[in-house]
View 1 (cartoon, rainbow, N blue to C red):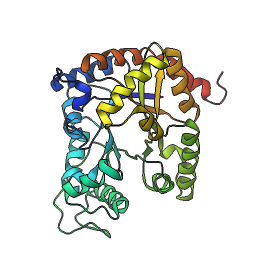
View 2: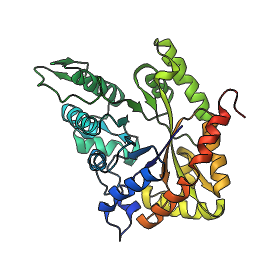
View 3: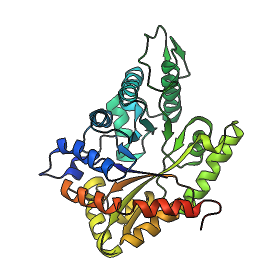
View 4: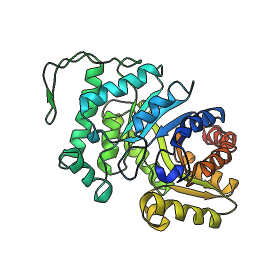
Length: 323
């Protein structure tokens, strides 16, 4: 059971008086506290530290934790250059990188970003899958690539990652098409469904697609991206998350929790909420802390860290023969 935390790289999370240079110390604190992974989000929603830059800064500051993106938006970058940056971080970290990718969303959080990147919105999922295939081919030494969308001749020698074939690549998304693509092509699944039942059925679909492609369930890491606020009660936690949702997304909590997994309340209530996803099959939790400045982020980090032993125990209880 892996339990990770999202580094608060957005300006709304480090607060008006915070210093983003303290994010490296935040990552070290998380590693010392028992978290096994540190993730950085991507996008242009608000001023933020760029995801790969954040992970590169964490490489020499940490020793054991997995460093991940949740999720990287490859269309924001030139595909060959992105392959080099990813391979470089994996190489410098000694193989500690995991890359979750996504194609963006309709509305103001997706299509305008494609315009800024001068990349067409149409066929975005095919472009994403081809980009990942290109990366893997480059990391294996390919000198040319001919896909339906991306075509390159005379590719220069690529930076080789620490691990042969490159870091694991996960897919974020839970549409039927995304579930099928995860099973066929990707090394992990990082969705954020509001209902654990949807997680369970989605994971079954991923594993069926994997089996149809000649893969096994163990080929795909079942992960979960979830916003968490540990508070005195559900009511006080929801009040804090209301402010968080409006500052981060410009929408009320009621709208956010229709599309994303959100868990709040007392220690026991948070454990129960996360435990439902563990029972549904999640084995790597990526926790986004619902707080709006670095002091509050550190407080939430410590409160969630105190729950890690119980979360890991819930994984063992959920295993066959557990009690």
